[in-house]
Length: 146
Image (cartoon, rainbow, N blue to C red; front, side, top):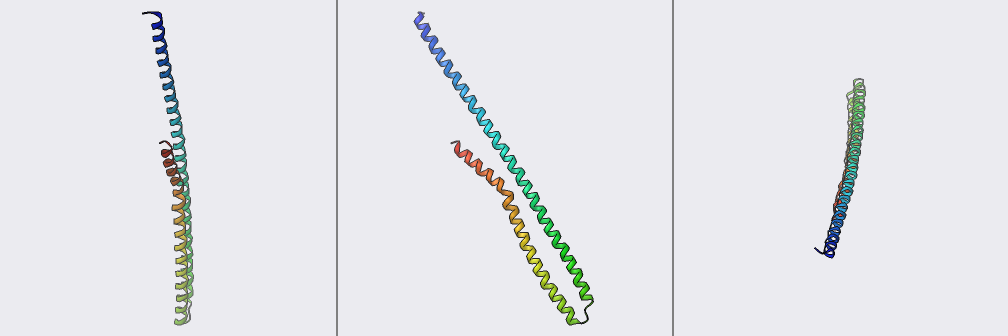
């Protein structure tokens, strides 16, 4: 084989080899970058799950504290009214004490229902916010990969 043909073949081989090596290196770099992005995304997702669980635990603690405080106050009020009723001097006084207690107890119950509803609403809203943010980030990431 003439030297010129050998040099041309060698040059073509070197060009193909260099192009292949560059393509492989570029593909490897892209894969490493994608893996790093995925790892960072997953870390943020785990952080969001921890934030969500922490918020849920705090909200449930607030709900339980409120319910226990209501139950305690309700019991104390009931005992107090029972004592007052036991000391009533007439049926009329007994009926008045009972009527006042019924109104007060109903008002307290409705206030507690509203408070519990607000606490539950806050629980759902604040617990799912970090997770909703991660879902939005996932959608955004998928759309950016198109």
